[in-house]
Amino acid sequence: MSVSARTAPGRITHRVGHSSWEGEATRTSEVFNPATGEVTGVLDLASAEVVDAVVTRAQTAWQDWRHVSLAKRVRVLFAFRQLLEERTDEIARVITAEHGKTHDDAMAEISRGQEVVEFACGIPQLLKGGFSENVSTGVDAYSILQPLGVVGVISPFNFPAMVPLWFVPIAVATGNAVVIKPSEKDPTAVNLIADLWREAGLPDGVMNVVHGDKEAVDALLDHPDVKAISFVGSTPIARYVYERGVAAGKRVQALGGAKNHMLVLPDADLDLAADAAVSAGYGAAGERCMAISVVLATESVADELVAKIAERTRTLRTGDGMGESDMGPLVTRAHLDKVTGYVEEGVAAGAELVIDGREGAGDLGGGFFLKPTLFDRVTPQMSIYTDEIFGPVLSVVRVGSYDEGLQLINDNPYGNGTTIFTNDGGAARRFQHEVEVGMVGINVPIPTPMAYYSFGGWKNSLFGDTHAHGIEGVHFFTRTKAVTQRWLDPSHGGLNLGFPQND
Ligand code: NAD
Image (cartoon, rainbow, N blue to C red; front, side, top):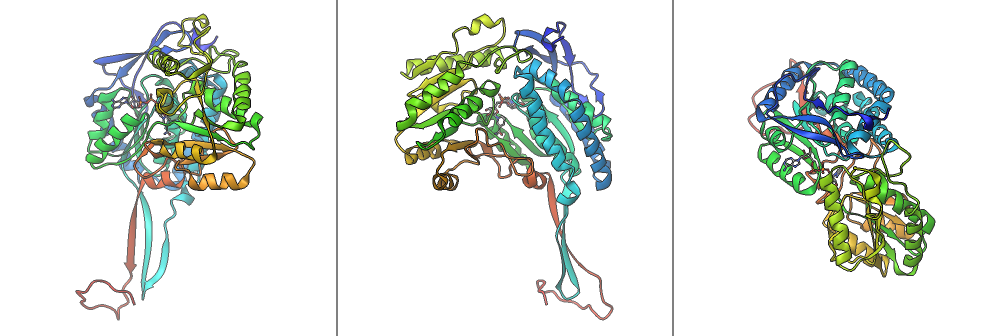
């Protein structure tokens, strides 16, 4: 039975350590299956009081977890990794049922999250500080990395498993306790992941889940026992979370929205570029922060490139992510309406609508469907160019040269991801050097960094200075202590009120 065939909406609630919350919610929200439009769950939304109780539980658990040896922590991480691999299909089905992306795509996002767990399994190596013997006569200096305490994670709807897995494994491995607030649109995957941490032997209270909306987020941002916030979501909320969290004295990394460009030079392999544009533009219905939403086609190849993109786009099957589809629905009716509104604005502004994804979308049942939509001759003044649409809408902008394309990318307020298609190594090298974007691809559609590199954009795509996972993730969740030691020689000593000098 496909998950989308479920009928009775079940209650979805917080996880206070190993237990489900047993209180009575004052506010709830509905969770939908976007492929059918049916309500499949009713979610408890945490009040500030509930957040406080969960943070207090985490703070208590942290007092013990911070002293647990690296050897024991690593055993928990290896066990969690094994369980995650075994349950990937189960979690993926839930993601498809609440988010809408295809089951294969949901499997892939968990797999990318698992890579971060594997990175965190190497935490004993990553937490090694430095040691310098004899920095002054008889004096040694060294550094140690210690956990922060309780850390908050606030995640978006579009990667309900992967984004939490960018942060939680590293936060836990470095000795912190976590309170995570997932998106209220697809909250169940994080509850399943919390169960796996319990099964893996993580002590009660180290990993906690509060569900909710702005009220829960604000309570985490203001809580004095929450020492750091890792946020991923849209740019206006990222900016808000950053400013409010920093004002409350917290360490904050807030990853925001995107408008990713693909620059196609005349010497590119146009079949490869067209495959990439379609895959990166319409995968997950464009609901990826690394989705390509603008193709900058150099004039001499633009007609041919648009024809190749259109030909491939027409072959895509849109439908329930559990079925034989390449692309699922959008996450909510409101989001579908917003994306459709952009298509209308693009037409009104005079862009050439090569493929209209609104046609036939209504025949796909009661779900929130828009088929792949392709615009050509888009100009930088149009809202389909300036705004993050976050849907299956690809815009082709024709440019006269590499320089014109580069200028557009660098003028854009976002700087998450970009990619260039060319067979000219010199041009590609110049692009990686000159482009003002945090994650760069060369002849690849979606340049998402591996777990042992760090993930993060520039400009309005990231507030704060630390990217997610990789060594930057380890630094984000730890604070460094520098120790200077001397074991006194009986012949040494005496008063010296001067500033320490080394000899
Ligand atoms: P969103 O900003 O609406 O929500 C993100 C989180 O913030 C959710 O947990 C939500 O409950 C909470 N939130 C929403 N409104 C709030 C408010 N007014 N005050 C406090 N908290 C609030 O984002 P979304 O729609 O869930 O996710 C899509 C966005 O996330 C896109 O803009 C996408 O580009 C971005 N994203 C960025 C990255 C990245 O790495 N830069 C990765 C994934 C998604």
